[in-house]
Structure formats: structure tokens, C-alpha cells
Length: 90
Image (cartoon, rainbow, N blue to C red):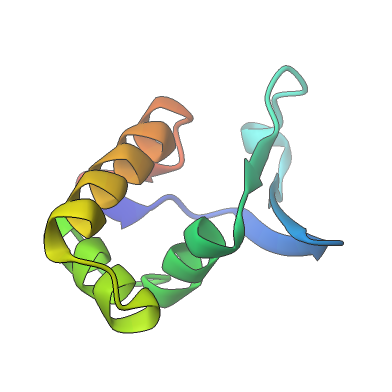
């Protein structure tokens, strides 16, 4: 997978908001808010192909969690990004 172009991650207090840059991405019915972990993953894979295994490895590295929990969280994050139209196949 790969991030779609035209999105910028911005910090607002303790949360992170993904904003669209350009009229083709504007959808005022949806706003993507990310927690610190999701924002960390988003920044870590910017401009690169990735899959659930890569995201899980990043979670294990950053948060020292077990691989099964990291894999579960990585798959959930990828699913939410895909449903929101933020990522596409490479």
C-alpha cells in the first residue's frame, strides 16, 4: 500500500488531524483524527510502500509491544485508512 498524495498531517493539541490539500480531496463530511500512534505510523511510512507487517514492526520498535498485538493494531489502522480513502495499492 501507499499513502495517497495531497494529505498533510497537522498536530492540534494532543491529537493529529489529516487535512486534504487541493479541491479534489475535500470532503467536509469526514475528518480524519489520529492518535499519537497512528500519526507516528503515518509519518514513518510517508512516501514509501508499506503493509501490515511493516506497520507492526514499527509499533514493536517504538512501543515495545508484542508482535501479535502490534499486528492486530496495524491491520486495524490500515483498514481505517483504506475505508477513509487515504491509501491505495502501490
